[in-house]
Image (cartoon, one colour):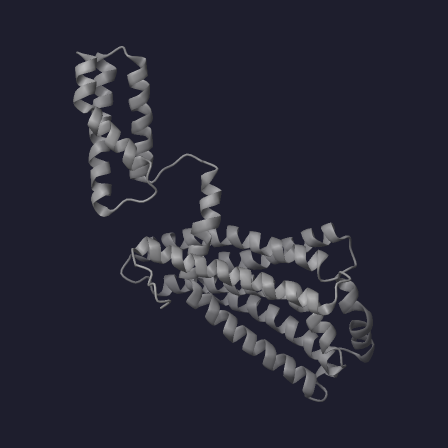
Length: 322
């Protein structure tokens, strides 16, 4: 076989396939073209291997076929771009896609939390039924504030992160059962409500907010996201839609697994704030300000995910702000 003539005859196909493989996204037409070119190049590789001793050409076509197979079948080798893409695209897109679940979960949870805390703080006898006067005194005067500085900051951050990651993972992993998610969520909501109610009843609401808000906004948001994603997974079992139940659960399960990884990072940030900012000597307004800015940054991250989804769907972005 004349290798040069064969190369000249097929070079355009190979170069076109290389051009397509360098792109991050394909249109439907380009995807069909890439599949056809991949098949032709695989055939060319087989011909060249059997007829030509040219190792450079074999190596080039082998690499091109391997890349084409990965792009066409969805299989890929690990690259440093993978975690970067997860952080910048996949995780925020998943947050945006499941927003109706976790935003609804957050709204109901915060409403229950506020009502329960108000009930504990204002209803005579409720706080006394929860804790003895001695327990209340220790909580109000010592234990609540000292909790955040009871251990070295780095050790405390690790402990908090591990505990919160476990809570989030429980919501995600047991989501298909629904009830465990609701139980974990109720426990977290009532813990905050009861402590806040007792401190408010004893005139220490400012202390409570000053120590909870800096890390609690992001921490509770992560818990609400985990609970919402878990509930969405459970609802997929009940109502899989047009897919089979197995396929729907597999698809949503992959999304949920990615959410678990991303939320571990979010909870790491809240754990660092809880260990280093919450017990710091910064004025209360500064600590609360840090918590608010962190929460706003997370919401902006979710908004970025919404734009990623719109870009993938091919929806044009309006110039008039709508």
